[in-house]
Structure formats: C-alpha cells, structure tokens
Amino acid sequence: MKINASRYVAESQDEGARLVIKTDRKELREQLKTIHLSAIPPSSVVVDAGCGVGIGSEIMLELLGRRHYPSKLYLLDLSEQRLADAKKRLAPFSSRIKIIAKKCDIVDIPLSADSVDFIFCRFVFEYLNSPKKVVNEFKRILKPGGRMVIGDLDTCAMAFYPIDPELYNHLKQLFKQIANPDYDIAVGRKLFSFVESSEMQKIHVYMLGHNVIHGNTSYSIKKNWEMKLDKIISYISKNKNDLGFELKHFKEQFLLFLDTPGLFSYTPYIMVEGTKE
Image 1 (cartoon, rainbow, N blue to C red):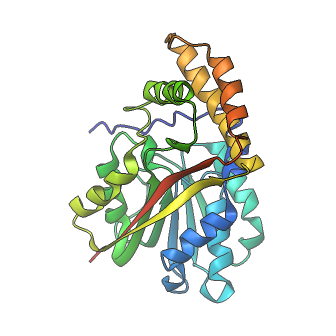
Image 2 (image 1 turned 120 degrees about the vertical axis):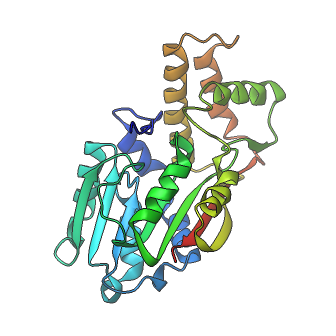
C-alpha cells in the first residue's frame, strides 16, 4: 500500500535556525506542565514525533529530572540535519538515557506495536496529509495505558488588533496560497476529532495562547515572522501566483506593523491527550 507522505512546506536550509528562534521555552515548559508530564512513569519509552532540533525533548528531560528519566527517547523527523542537531542538543543526557534518532514519516513509524509509553507531537499536524492515519499509527505503537499528546495552532496568525484592513486582507491572501493540502491553518480545531475517531480513551483538551503580543513585540516573534514570510513569498513566487500586490513591499510593511503601539495578537494553541486502553 502506498502511504501518503507528509509534506513540510516550511522546509529550507535555515529551518533549524528558525525553530530555535521561534521556540518560546517558557511557553513550551508551561504546555508540558499542563499535560501532567510528571505523570510519566520512570524508565518509560518516550517518542518526540516531529522533534525538530530537539528543544521539546530537552525541556521534557529537564522537567522530568533524573529520578523520572525515560529509559529510551525516540526522536522522529523527516530531516537528517534536524535529527543531528537534536542529538547534539541532547548529548548531555546521553550517558543516562538511550536516545535513538529515526528519519521517518510519522504516518509509518518503524517501531513495534505496544512499545511506547508516551508520545508528544507539537506543530506537526498542520503539515500532514493523513492526520487520522498518524493518530492511528501513534495508537499502534503505544502500550496499553500509554498516552499521546498532539498540539497545534488554530487559525494561525489571524488575530490582530488594530490592523489596517488592506494589510490584513493581503495577509489572508498569503496564507490562502499555502492552505490545504500543504498547510492547514485551522488544524487545531480538528485535533479532538482525530483522537476521538481513533477510539482513544480518557481524552482531554487543553487550550492555551501562542505568540501572544501585547504592546512590544519580542525579537523572536519578529524574526520568526521575517523568516516565515520569506518562505511564503518564495513558495508563492515559485508557483508564479500573482496576488495583485508586491510581496516584498508587503513583508516590509507587515514587519513595521508588528511595532504598532498598543498592538494585541494571539493564536489559539490546542492540545489533545488520549490514552490507549
């Protein structure tokens, strides 16, 4: 059977650097506390699905501490470079934890059934062509009693106030160009349905804020926007789509807009947890 591979529309040579810049460690730490990470039994087998450069795994291990370290940590990603970066980042833990990197598409994970205690997957479902298959694949590799937590954004980067109507319309046009099947900006609201349809049990939903701006926009958010807009503009230009406005000028205006006094912005971040029984 041919499996539909995930397509990572954000791929580029500087994607690893962007992931480092964009990750709010304090925010991620709070997300992991919210899902009761400490409830993972000591010596568990843990999977970081779509691990990127390994910041999520690093924070998980910091929060768990030595007494609750997993016995194995699997890093799954499509990129060999990001897996290498993740292993380098996690090297200080490697004397106490077996860290295994596997290049794979998470719709077809090279792990045995009933072999994993906990799966964490963040900011991946927005790029998946077969999200229900991925949830079922997670369920397959989980042990009975094992937990999965998937988290993603809903209507990414669309809540701004105040914003010029023309600038906002141009922003919507940009995101429309990379919408399904390459990028689902509204995937957050669908996560519960994906987990519920897999017949997972003890399902919990958590809703938090992401990239919250109130007043001053942080350097990391502005730099992430700059790099993200470069990718979107490159994607649109490659497909020779004419949106009726000059893309580089829009980028300049939008980055200036992020310094608007009194600006408020947020994106809903939704996590769904399920247990295999």
